[in-house]
Image 1 (cartoon, rainbow, N blue to C red):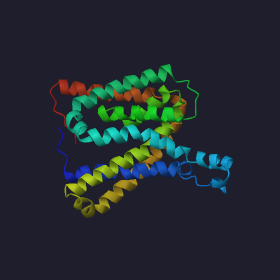
Image 2: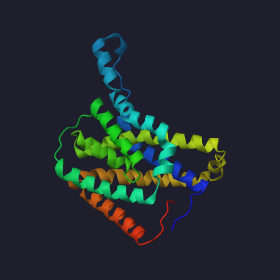
Image 3: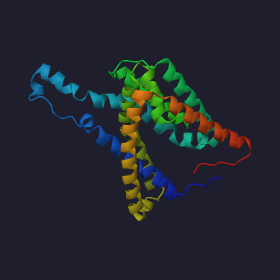
Length: 249
């Protein structure tokens, strides 16, 4: 069951990520674009420090994205070929669900709200887990990473979304370059209307999903998501054990 992805399917999957990226930027516009710098900040040390602190948000994102950027450039193709197997993804879904239940139960009362550079780097390392363990979603890995270093779960979730912007944008650009090198960039030109519609839908769905997720997370935690992952991973493994052929699309 399943089929080999066509170049168009690959292109569509990559391109609609832009809508999701844009939704995060729009939702947190004031966090991403703070340019109200103190006047004459370069001529007075106190103002200079205060002005520089306005860029701290961007520095944190750079620190957080470094591990994924380095490892992604080095191992991206190998990971897709070696680890992109259905049974591996199903197993990681199951394991990830157990981890989410474990984290939600043991460290649900974190109270720290400040993301330091050390924490940003640690969360960035957790993000690479998703790269080498397909089925361990990027958001799950970074949120668990944030909670593991003491952040409140909603703060960890928000930083996970912030970190998604440079990470997904980098992956997006990398895939577009691959299309260009393989002479399949024409697909984007031929199907630009479909891709535009896909991005609009992706943008709207992501906007609703992010806001709903944050509200739900504050009240209920990760338990439901952990159970969902365990059920999906378990069902896939059972089906494969029964001889049902499954393939990635």
